[in-house]
Length: 105
Image 1 (tube, rainbow, N blue to C red):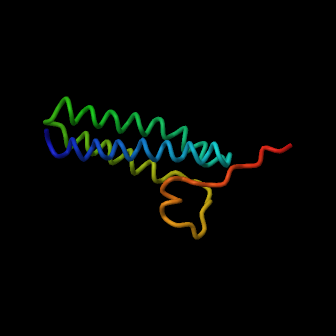
Image 2 (image 1 turned 180 degrees about the horizontal axis):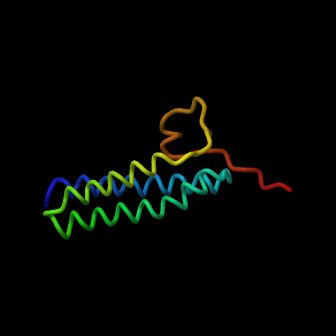
């Protein structure tokens, strides 16, 4: 296996993690920016999966597959979202821990 396969596999895992983190934040806060990021994350994850598939099944095009995965990660990072953290430690931001919205009516 080519090293670019392992790089694209790791990038795909990061893409899935960021998508699930955005979804978790949206469910807990209800912010529309995170809703859009969670919905768009489905497409970016599919794009990263396509890149992984290209690097696995066609090793001669592994640079193309890795480029597709990196493009998906780049586009996922450019989403406009609300600022929800101020001075929290990095592990809190990494895991997407935010206070739940109030469900009282």
